[in-house]
Image (cartoon, rainbow, N blue to C red):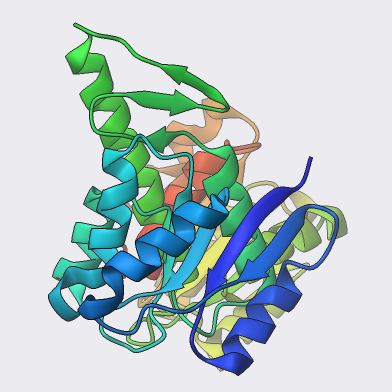
Length: 301
């Protein structure tokens, strides 16, 4: 069954772009008048209520918290409509963004979001758990748990954290370089990780052996390096890390080693190796999202 998406975007070009990204059998897209000021809050609420979409994607208006007031109205009504804000007018700041997430917005996007990025976040918002004040909605079933306030608070915090992760992944943070190098002697592994990173707006370099990876790193200066543990000719990701950091003195990077063997963790993370993090393969998507969001926000660099 198709999900209904209502676009409340003022800029015609941006509106057409977002609509084009969602073209297909999965979504039914309609358009409506955008919110431009706090004076139009009631009219916007009335229009959304009349359409009753599964998802409303709307321009973010920071004046008098206009967009948040629209969101709050539907949250208070135990809404079935989810919301994504687009910072088309560049009116957001850290406090406004956090307020929107605290009130339950599904995602907070930049107007230059990629097609893959938009589709990913729309799907995530529509399929993930949505937070209400006191109740918890999972899939299509309303679950009310009176007296289970602790569990409800935990779920609310987890849901808010996932939405913040979605924001960090979908928003270009130009102050932080997002160039990444991936080293693996498996073409399948390289392409799989390359696609995942590129879907989240990373610039990805790839190499199949240590010599090429070292040359690329020194030439392109990525801030994140991700390497398989087991490499060619008995070498390891730890060997690659030590070559970079100890031999070539290339230290301004966050070095991650991936391994399918949990028993290798202690040896990989031994002090002096220079490895900053170790990731188990395969990792849950939520763990990868948290890692990439932290990199995007500059928390690891």
